[in-house]
Amino acid sequence: MSILRRLRGASNRASNRESNRAGMGSDAEVSQFNTDAADTPPPPAYTPYDNGPVQPRATSSGYAPPSHPPPPQAAWLDDALQQLKGRSEDPLQFLSRYDTCFLIDDSGSMAGGLWKQALSALAGLLEIATKYDPDGVDVLFLNNPAVANNVTNVNTLYNLFHSVQPSGSTPTGTRLEDILLKYLNDYENSNDTVRVRPLNVVVVTDGTAEDDVESVILTAARRLDRLNAPLSQVGIQFIQIGDDPSATVWLHELDDEIHKIGGGCRDLVDTTPVVDVIDGGKDGFDAKYLLKAMLGGINKRHDRVENVQH
Image (cartoon, rainbow, N blue to C red; front, top):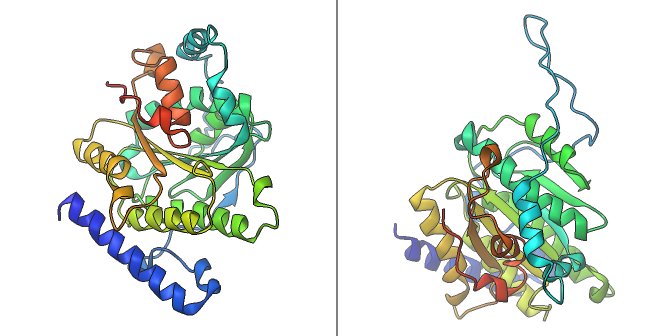
């Protein structure tokens, strides 16, 4: 099935669900977006992650591997921030209005070099996010039930990554739905929506999802439209790890096409390819990349910036 046909099918499914909800009353809004995947068991529910040091894992021989050292300061981050110093206003200050959530693909295809690449890229982005979000950021995975809330330092992220072994499928839609559904219910039920902080979701993944991401995004966007929420209330940034061409095409379709179909709706999505910062490299990581990766989903001026190339 072509990607555009898949997107149109997602639009029809989302429209049918909205029509059904209209006849069922407001309580139907809290139902799951992805009814098509009802026969597939969902990943386990999240469990809180201890922000303290990760304990070494025991082995059959009794040997416990040493704790991982903290990551070095990202040189590319210092350089990127230096490039921004000459501006009259700090564009990253926009992040201070938002709660930021990182959703990490820990499927089996991420094992090995891609997992290291994801950590290297994410460490700098998280360091930026925590500078502007005093409450810290949340880090969740597609499969592993661990979740770290209010993370304020890179060492916690580093330890968390080394406690997770990539395995399983890519249920991006299911996990994105978990995040968006809870947020939208809280927003709609709030007596003062102005005081509800906007949400910036950063999804780090290497490939296409195995479930229905499109319907999740369309339903969330249309619900925000019906609520007359500010256009920047929710943003979703997809950062691609690796160079899978099918994933690149799929993510570009999410970015450029999904909000145009089915009569149109607000654009929630931006996509950015990651660049290689493994072993101290920083080619391609600059101020432009930093702004697009962190702000592209919530500020469409940065969404329009041309994607950084590998």
